[in-house]
Image (cartoon, rainbow, N blue to C red):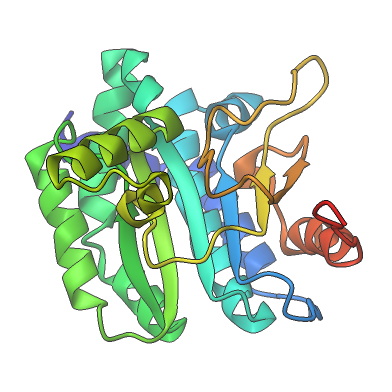
Length: 263
């Protein structure tokens, strides 16, 4: 897929309005007092295609709108004191989708990971970039773009924004076990040091968007070890339709809930 497709997305009047609405919404972040209860927020970015179809747009264009929401949440995370954000954007199972969508998403990733605006956003929000997941199946240009952004942001501060791309929880555990045995580390507790998220705190809260009526709530195996004691929230809003107030409402509800953890 050539860059002409992405140019068509950016030059579409309807898309311009949609992206403008998202930028406007995330330009006003409400205040929130989390009481230090969330150091790591993870979001399963579901519903991009359905959001686009609801607007009469080609369904893959929803991924571009989702990118804009990620940038907005990055700003909210800084304001609310959430130091680590993870967005699951492409699963190990998504390779089963049609080739047109795969090519669109990979082209989008390759181009926007190198977009100066992304780098500026990370610098402004004092966040290092981190890739979570496999690299052996991603296109080499995407792998290079991921590595370049990680290198450029390594000194941006103590905050982290991670993109889980070609990530699957079972796959992650399998790869961790393989690394352990290859290095002779056989103590069960050692597996935590071989996960993709080593060095990051476990998520306290995971939000999955796009879980409306008629859909059975499920985790899709996201970070099975890291989220064993996390709170989970499922919202009907498609990911591109998530707003600062909507996100704050979920976080406020979580912050006001006491998890006993067996006590």
